[in-house]
Image 1: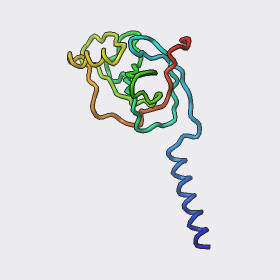
Image 2: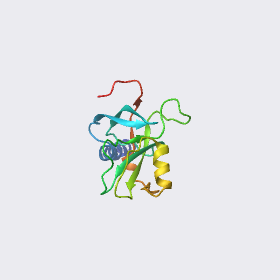
Image 3: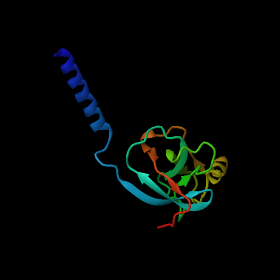
Length: 140
């Protein structure tokens, strides 16, 4: 009987933990992002994905990004180390008054070297998500 109660109480704790951590339903959002200078389709899920590994850049801060600015995928299909869209989201913050369009990870790194943007080392892992890049799909 004690063994049965231990199992039931363990299952109850695990189910409470999973209910608190995982959303009831995971939503899906189609959007376009820049990858290597091109606009490509991605599908972003709202299910939490902690500790992503593929670099993904999202613009934050009081300074609005340049018109037409999209998020930027730093890696994609066929690139060494690509984990299929396990995105590690990095914040990009403009430090100048007149932002310009950035279309690749190389653009972000160049702007950072010029002191135009900052990509903070600290990043909240709860922004990470999973979603494929569809390089040959028609854009919405």
